Image (cartoon, rainbow, N blue to C red; front, side, top):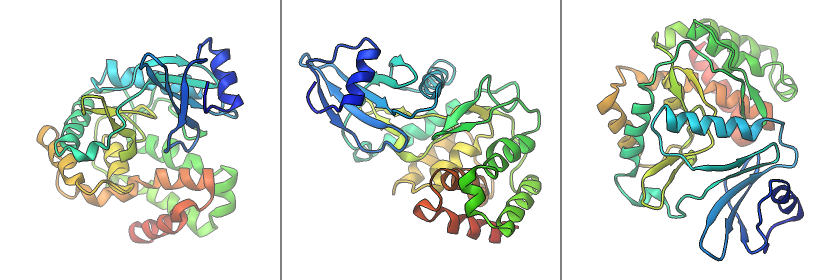
Amino acid sequence: MNGAGPALRAALRAAGVDASGADARPLTGGVVSEVWLLTWPDGTRLVAKHAAGAPPGLYPAEAAGLRALADDGGLTVPEVRHAGDRLLLMQAMAAKDPARRPAFWAEAGRALARLHTVRGPRHGWYRDGWLGLLPQRNAWADDGYEFYATRRILRYLPEPRAVAALTAADRAAIERICARLPAFVPPTPAVLTHGDLWHANIVATAEGAPAFIDPAVSFTWPDVDLSMFHASAAPADADRFFGAYAELRPLGDGWRDRMEVLFLRELLSTVAHEDDCAGALARLRRITARYV
């Protein structure tokens, strides 16, 4: 197999995949995993995600999330061909920039709105998952505020890198915001969510339609997905996305005001993974100063 390193070759062999005639090209965007595009002489194209130090269950959980988004939520996702502890192998999507087609982001917004019509029994999921390399705690909870505070924000405070990076004042401010979540977020039923919806996790099919990748699925507030898309370097024409979403699920007054509060989860996850990557700690402190 041309281009691949020995670790990927070994993972493919262990999965029983004959890639001897394939070309391998690294893809950008992988934070946790190495991501490769494999192309066979007959034109078959698959994406391989591989991480030698991946926690057991990481890729099976991702595959289960993709199935839920497709089967229960009606989203277009890549077909999974293999999900083991060292390798996730799935259908390749288009290589073109989806933003070049003006309707793309509007279609993605409507697809997400339809996903958010799928109600959950409670907040949580039937199994724990992963956000990056750290566990996503999904134990069921009847109270959305308790769930978001304990499973999505406070759960990062004991992580070693967060302990090292956060001051006592940071921790106290985060805890106060958690106690005040009802003042920022209206009571909302739990719905099926993607869970890690920054714009790079919406890609295009060969036909140019939106497809969703890299989920961290659970039933929780729909604003969790909206905040991730809104607050994490949204594309220039993100208004198309939110406008189309609102056609099916009205956003309500003041919806933008709560986006950064909910984005604390992503900032804390970043600090817990990578210390102060991309200014996450400074942004976290700006948010806590504003909302405490």
